[in-house]
Image (cartoon, rainbow, N blue to C red; front, side):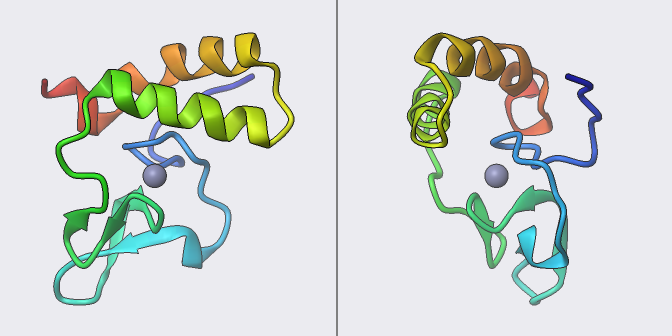
Length: 89
Ligand SMILES: [Zn+2]
């Protein structure tokens, strides 16, 4: 799978496909970095979560979407630590 930074949420790794996928800033403008599920009105919905916690959450989501636990783990561990939200830590 090709991973292209900037075209995915920089918190959870969800690819952006629709304008509605983008989160919102405090002033109501669209976030360029984060998706609607992670970021609304300038705040992370899961503020305070650790990278490990976020990976765990994403793995559960991936399994719900039909991935095997192993595939989901592998993907999340590869993608999430490289994203902007987690690089700072
Ligand atoms: Zn996200």
